Length: 105
Length: 157
Image (cartoon, rainbow over all chains, first blue to last red; front, top):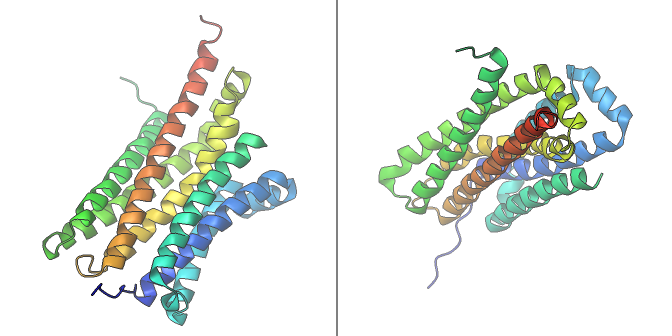
C-alpha cells in the first residue's frame, strides 16, 4: 500500500507560498518600473535608489506574507505537492519573465 | 599590490555568491540521502547558504550603488551594450529571487527530512533552485565584466 503523502507544517507552507508570491511580484514590479518612469522615480525617492527600494519591499513582503500565512494556516490547508509545484513554477516564470522582458524591451 | 575598495567589494560579492551556491548544492546532496545522522549538517549548510547570499546581497548592493554607474557608462559606449541592457538588468532583479529562496532554505531544512518525504522534496527543490539561479547570476556577472573589458580594449586592438 503506498504511503500517504505527508503535509508540510503550516509555518513552513506559509513561507513557501509567501516566496512564490514574492517572486512573481518582484518580476511584475521590475517590469512595471522599467515601463513606467514615474514609478521608478517614486521608488528612487523612497530609499535613494529604485533597486534598494525593491529589495527592501521584496524582503518585507516575503516576511509579512509568510507570517500572515503561517498564523492563519492558509497555506497549511493547501496540498503540499501543489505548493512546491507553485514555488518552482513561480521561479521559472519569474526568472524567464525577467530575461525575456529585458531582452525584448 | 593595490586592491581598491571597489575591487574588494566586487570580488567579495562574487565569492559570497559562489559560496552560497555551493552550500545550496551541499544541502541538495545531503538531502538526497537524508538520515537522522546528517540533519545537523543539512541545517548548518542551509544557514551557510542563506548567510553567504545575504553577504553577496550586501557586497553587490554596495558595489552596484557606489561603483557600477561608471562601468555602466563604459559598457553602453562599447560594442556590447546588451551586457548592461539585458544581463545586468536581469541579474539585478533575478538576484532577489535567489535571495528569497536562500532565506527560505533554512526554514525548509528545519523539518525532519528523513521522515517527511514532502519536506525533503521541498528542500531539494529550493536548494536546486538556489544553486541554478546562483550559477546563472555568476555567468551574467562574467558577461557584464566582459562588456566592460571589450569596451576598454576596443581602441587598443
